[in-house]
Image 1 (cartoon, one colour):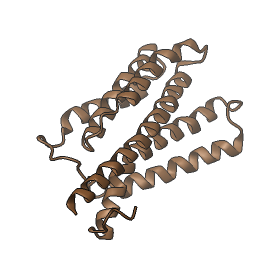
Image 2 (image 1 turned 90 degrees about the horizontal axis):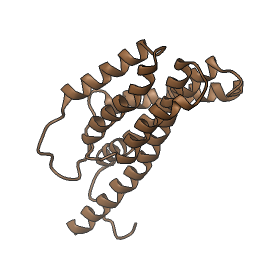
Image 3 (image 1 turned 180 degrees about the vertical axis):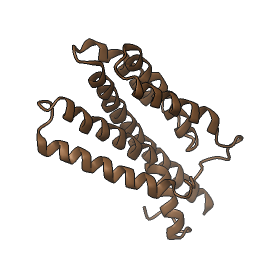
Length: 191
């Protein structure tokens, strides 16, 4: 780290930290919410102390999301973006996810959650100029793989949330290291 000059103040580093951990924390939040709710519907799956840990993790990730998103997420871009934030498709995919949650007793709701969440993830990550191929594929696969379990549809729906959220968090770890590598390159080139 000695070859990287400290040319930026703490505010810039804080913005970089917020932008580089966005995908990871979003995945942790979705997975912990799904895990906590699934533990209420299927208590034998997760012992009581771990259900409390899942709830506290969700609350911490939600508070983190409020901190990052309010008033706006100022991302540290790796390259100038030719387009502004595509709010319309993101809003549409999030609306579809809420409708699917409302109808989570239906088979089609479980099957469509994966593609709808993958689309929402894609639009959220594109603001950070991240291409979450692996996480999107995991969401889609989890939506259809959940039918292999003989569980009621709401529990399958929540399992898709857990698997997709964990895949998103893992993709966020890789995105963090990618952000860090690009940042080091830019700072070395600035010398």
